[in-house]
Image (tube, rainbow, N blue to C red; front, side):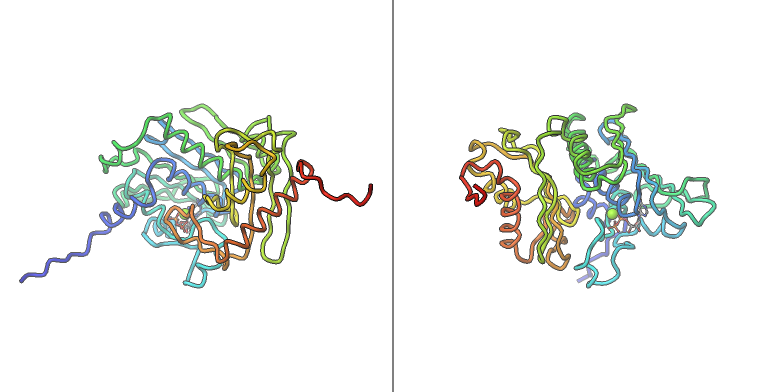
Length: 339
Ligand code: ADP
Ligand code: MG
């Protein structure tokens, strides 16, 4: 019997892997914004056209890449962020899987321009179907500009699966807000079809929350801050009166990474018990920082789900910190020895 197993060519392997990382324009937006943050950028501009279906471009003033790195960046499992398995448990960067650019290059027409401060000229590289079409030196500001055109042009099934522009744009704005909330010290802008939707000067978390989630929160935020040996919690929760009928403005970040956690949502909901009507949802933007060895971020390719080493402790601390911050609104009388 003849042998039948073949090793898939790289471009096909990349396209298959891309399915996990890049599901829609917003997933590419997330990856590119996170790369810009990881590169130490202080200014990050996002431009999209047709809700990212025809263009997604991210321009940053971060550290840039060398000529060789610019090519390497598009290889699968190519990353500057970890070197060994131990590093995986000490992650401080947003990225580490070395998959995003390889995936994007498998499903879009990509152009990257980048320059490091120490180089006089930058480099421009064009890639399509995981193949480098050309690379040449160019004059370029320090930092990186990456544009991807016609997402899924070569994967018609995926392209057809995309939702309306309004819906895809909502997903993009969601991802943009998550990253912009996590890094209030960085300037961000978002331009869609030539129209600027967000222009966020670097500032404090409070300013960023108000800029992104609305002026009505301006006088309605309660600071949360609790430092323990195990973890630090900081951020803001909305005064009870800001609770909404729909689960809207709820953000958890663990070591600056936005995460989804039904379990921690529950801790928050509990902390507001009796202060808000049932069936309503509090607003919160909370940052939990703890030793990276206490979280596994490598549970899912999009990294939005994480696993805590000890989730009960995290739950208890989060709930206590928020209850503490909200004590003034509690209807349960507390003992006051100064009376
Ligand atoms: P990861 O972020 O997981 O390392 P990516 O595929 O997103 O994987 O990127 C591969 C590598 O390319 C990164 O590790 C980084 O060295 C480099 N890189 C990507 N984007 C940028 C950027 N905007 N500025 C500087 N370097 C970048
Ligand atoms: Mg990345």
